[in-house]
Length: 59
Image (tube, rainbow, N blue to C red; front, side):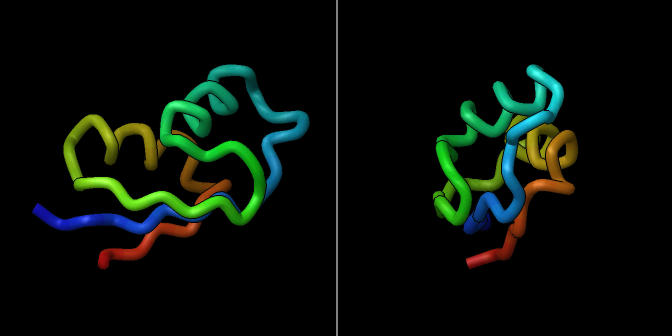
């Protein structure tokens, strides 16, 4: 499976609580944090929900 590098590029301040929780569940705490995770259907759903806050690239 592909690995994805996920970076939080926009702040979660003022966002919907569900979106903030989704970002935290991805392992991102503050702006410009980067995590690498395996691509799964569950992960892709989370990324789709908060895609406007993230930068995602395949590694």
